[in-house]
Image 1 (cartoon, helix red, strand yellow):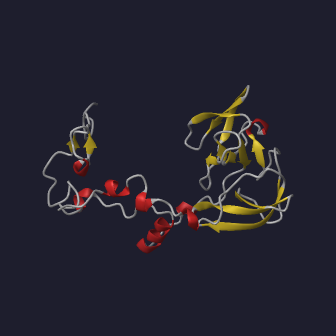
Image 2: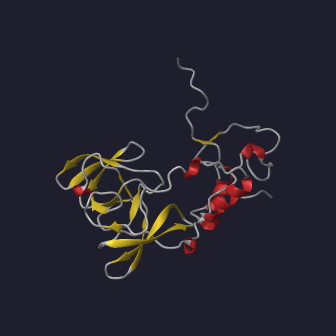
Image 3: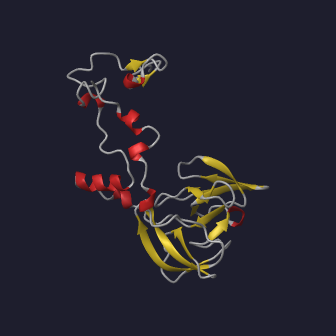
Length: 228
């Protein structure tokens, strides 16, 4: 009796779903001026978090920009470093991150440490933004973002050095680690396992049962192109 494939075990999350109850807080956008009272690390976020005290004495957490320090004030709609600003108030060419997809929603774009986006053009009611991937996307002009570059850049440049360090880093966010090649497994664990592959890696997407659906699914061709 064989084993289920890793993609079958993973499903839509299952044991690899992030443990959100380990998070310190959910990063939000300020609705009023606030003072930075601390800069903290969070298990589920590579970018540091700012602990903010708003004018109404409520505590809020927000993603940090490079250069933020304790005692600074975070303000609204002033296009200077660290402030929260609607896209229509941000000049063309200014760097920003943590963008809302729709106005007043949770920001979910450009949050990786060291990442930033820029505005290419402004039109009536919408703004054309260039993302870190160099792709462009239109946003509503009243979507908010944080001015500056996401703090923590260069973190991924430091080598793990030991497999154990990488294990604990991946386990914190429930990432799949290690990733093992099918040909390195035993025959009972994977269709490509065993001493030799023994059969083509191209299979039918429609006719193959789930336990054997690995490799090149309904590929027209594989390997290097022979065209000159």
